[in-house]
Structures are given as C-alpha cells and as structure tokens.
Length: 171
Ligand SMILES: [Mg+2]
Image (cartoon, rainbow, N blue to C red; front, top):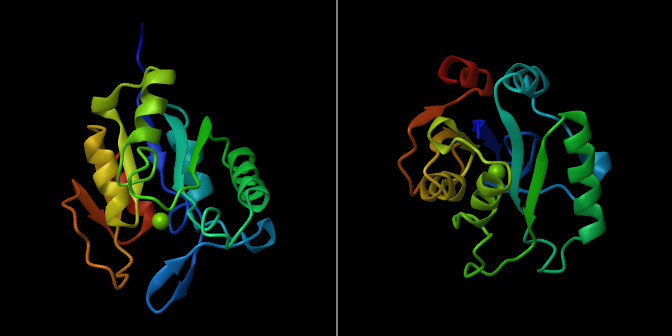
C-alpha cells in the first residue's frame, strides 16, 4: 500500500491564536473567539497537495471543568471544515498518564495507523515542548514555533521557527 506523509498541527498557538496570561498560552473557550493565525490557510492549502493534514490537540480545560466538550468540539469542527483537515484528534484529559495526552504519542500513533502514514516524511508542528516530544515519540520530524512562553522548552526539535510562514522553507 502506498503510504502518505502527514503534517500534524497543534491547535492553540499554531492554527489559531491563544490568549496569553502571565506569559503562558490559554485556550479560547468558544467558536466566537477563533482567530486563525496569519498565513495558516495558505500553508494548509499548499501542504494538502502532498500531505494529509491532522490537528492533534490537548484540551484539558474540559476535565478541569473550565470548558465544555460541546464548546471545544464546536471550535474543532469549525477548524476542520475551514482548513480542510483530514481528521482531528483531541484529548480532554488533564492526567499525564493518559496515553493520548501530549507529550504522549497516542493520538499521533492512532492517525499513523488508521491512515497508513509515512512517518519518516511526516512532521509535527507545535508551540510547546509537549508537542515536540509527542512528535519525537512517534518518530516524526518536529518543528517548534518558538513563542517565548515562560515555560522552558524541554525539548530538542529538528527545526525551530519564529514565523509560521517559515514552515514553507522546511517542508
Ligand atoms: Mg499550542
């Protein structure tokens, strides 16, 4: 079977803007707050020709009681349609033992298996160390969008970029 490479996008801070509180990213609560990051529609359009596009997102606000599944699913469905993503994977847990919650690779591995993805030619793109580690555990190449959050980047990505459009120079 012919395998297809994939791009795994993190949601908050990569596909869409986050709020920043005390230099840390905070997820939006509803579909009305969505601001798609500049350039991402064009990037997805270009990438879609050769790659399956996935969104891989931790949404622990749900298990913490800070947001509803319904709100999160509405945001995700909007993005899936707008960016023509192949599939969205979401983990609502706040418990780090969950195999789906990044930095664990469960969601990416599920996509790789389901869509027979060519891992060696695939990329995980995120703005936090958890995205990068999840990508590495899945054997993807990794790109960190460096936002200078207060958290230390506990990872060694293959590439670090400051602007999303730099994705096009790498892939
Ligand atoms: Mg993020």
